Image (cartoon, rainbow, N blue to C red; front, side):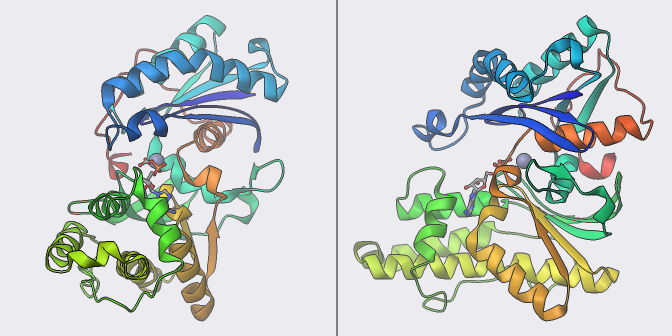
Amino acid sequence: MLLAIESSCDETSVAVVRGDTVLANVVASQIRLHAEYGGVVPELATREHLKNLPAVTRSALQQAGATPGDLTAIASTIGPGLPQALMIGSRAAQAMAFALDLPYYGIHHHEGHLYSPWISGRPPHAEWDHFEPNISLIVSGGHTLLVHVHRPLQHTVLGGTLDDAAGECFDKVAKLIGLAYPGGPVLDRLAEEGDPAAYDFPRPLKHKPDFEFSFSGLKTSVRYFLRDNPQILEDDACLKDLCASVRAAIVDVLVTKTLRAARRKRIRCITASGGVSCNVGLRRELKTRCDREGLQLRIADAGLCTDNAAMIGILADHRHRCGGAPTPLDAEVKPGWQLDAL
Ligand code: KG4
Ligand code: ZN
């Protein structure tokens, strides 16, 4: 049994996995704490991780019906993320590994996201047997990445965002409209009732053949649009149309580039992960366009799309069983670790 800790941003999460099966995946979200400030406050996140980690760990062990003596390995997210937040989870994991004399695995947060779409079922388990080479879209508040995953533990990064991440764009536009933080999910709900063709917003870099993204210009164009049309915010129907139009622009760029990568690399499977992969519009558009092109699509359940320790545990356990070298117990956290540096 392996115990994994995820604490890279604003979720304190501990999972217990046995082989490919997730026995427990407890997540304590700090969203409400940070909402008051309109974004994640690193100092508060660190203190909250410190406060929550013992109870979340106890709860994960209890749900898994396990004791520390049952564990055979320990893992944590060691980067990228908020430095102090990473340190809380990783130092705790390293101390546990030391005390229990177990191997420790320091996992790349985004590598965890790459494999979360392969976890499914009740209880959730990693379907390594069904694994297909895929193009993986990681879309969260901090990152937008397009990755070619050749086989488990082997991938090539195709591109990323030049400025704002997709989730950041959703949240910033939501803030301009006056929605509560984090605005992405709220904007998504309102967009469901609006007309995506009502307003025409730019689709940055959509037609460029590379796999880079850029969302800051789209946010700015919404700002100018609202400056010139302030009455939109007074009308419920117009507001919903605005949300639908912005969402359509973001989703169109994400889906177009993801499918272009699949065509270019001759890949028949698409996966998506990260908080923004919960977006109803994105899921629907990916499904429609994948079906049209006969591509397989895999997106995890919402609880595994957002930050969680199960994806870290499943990956660490796979590495452990493949004979991957453990990480030294004194390894430092890597706040700026790039996925292509793995
Ligand atoms: O992966 P995640 O939980 O944390 C990191 O950023 O690493 O992603 C959080 C981001 C936030 O920006 C949030 O607004 C966005 O994912 N998000 C959504 C939706 N659900 C979460 N954005 C658009 N539509 C959603 N339904
Ligand atoms: Zn994440």
